[in-house]
Image (cartoon, rainbow over all chains, first blue to last red; front, side):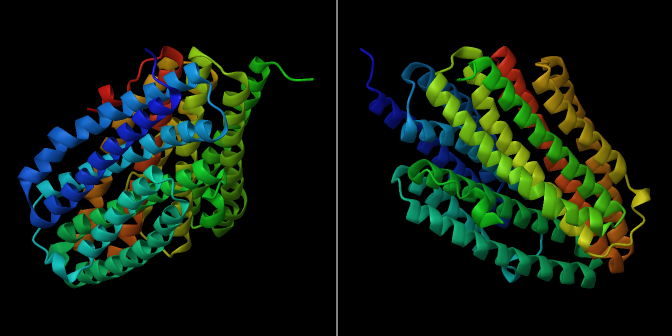
Length: 218
Length: 218
């Protein structure tokens, strides 16, 4: 027996959330692998979550194409399916960035990370990824808009981290390579927060039919 | 009179290519604005190409939704429309990265950029963006695969640039901030080449129905 379209959309949403959960896990593990130099955590990202995220992207995209072909959805459902195609892209990219952090975790780093605001930046970024997906499942554009404002906060923390690290490199040339790896982790967190912002914008477009992408950014 | 679906797809392709051409222009101007410290070029990206790219993304995405709703395309056309949604995402991201380079161009930098391989990296990256779009318009998966191999070359150049710049920062702490801005431009070029790779992968999926994304990457 064929499932009803509404059920199929629910299944798809569930699978997308499962993918999102894995991406959250990757980010969390990536950051902590780096901060705590935990190679077991790092390996779990490379060997478990990352391949599973990639597999899910292919699978979900194929499912979207199948539904577009068979169900010929209109209006809000059509916008939802289009949003899913863009969101799997963003989630997969976030997964790649978590892998970058994991690779940074594999290199030695001894800088007192506590002096810089990386843990706080990681915390806000993880909130953004989680809230972006939450706004999707609860169809909540208000929560999606909260993601957009948190992005500004993340940008401010990043500016502070960059200033601190440049000072540090100037004072201690021997620490340049270490400071650079912290800079790149901060840069990765910034990009993750940008992708969470994209997802939130896709949710607003899906629910309200309003394309907020280039109104808020410009 | 309603246009035929084939004509509408051609129009869409043309508009996507126009967007792609603007993105290429942005990248070209962004790199040269940075290398030559040309603020007029930098301003033309911020005030002309970038807003136009953003406008086109919204417009093209809406057109895809309209075609999906009204034409209920199947198989290869459906995959094409899905690919367009992902490609506008990538193009818009490339545009953002060009803006990043432009912003770096606005800051003073005096490093002898000729000693490092940034112009060559910029050249290969521009080839990738151009070839990715060419492979789309000519439906040429062979050209798309060439984009994927050029990506490896770009990664090698980036590694070399990173090694050179880290050496330089260690020797000349006074040049750290300048070297960092070169590092970030190299990083942006790397990301642009990643997006061109995504576009090439979407083209292969569209034409051959083969999802190469996570076979080649892993």
